[in-house]
Image (cartoon, rainbow, N blue to C red):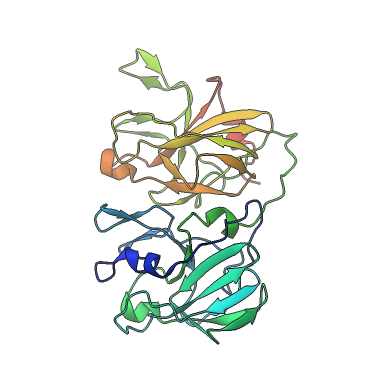
Length: 312
């Protein structure tokens, strides 16, 4: 959320002292009632909720993460610490211009667009912190959310995403890769070509050495299996709006997922954990069936791993 034209991003920076380093490999508690996995806002007409999303027509980046939260919902402390505030984000007295900082447990975070029950004192992880303010009043039709910003402007996504225990990998069945496509349905044929492995490319001179899994522009993308991330992976090498991706290696697999923007390019990820979001493919190929290009590192056919769970 952050950095609407009425508000300069720099306002937080001026108030910051030295910050404790954000700890790794730990996960915060649920922040909003009704959102047990701290699901992050996708894209709506006001913008996108992921860390690093464009703000001010691409001149600035989103330095927080927007955790989905219904107007009026109860808000909880993600970790134990000391409260301070109030935090004003818009400085215009609108209905959502309130928030609080929590510092402790090795973290420092600002939660904005909420009304805390108090601005000072200690709070425990999971304790009631306050309530979500009426965001629809200010931005009708937006996906209502809490703006969660690390004090050092680092990416809090991995702390928000709950740890997913690795599933048994013996059957080779991968998790659903894209929200809204639970069976990893593969793109059929459209005016740009077909999405199955081995489909003709370059007027029949080449073959598709990957599989295209249907995914709506802006949809959340998940890790098909547990492994180690590396990237970025550029497919087009021309800087277009979908020229991004990441590799996952682990659990006996190695795969490249392209035309997505990952939440990070390095580190470990668990099967089913949020990996990133689908990029705006319609912008580059209007009328195509939007999809994630999934390519095994050894160029073998990933279809059986993707479709193993179909209909189950």
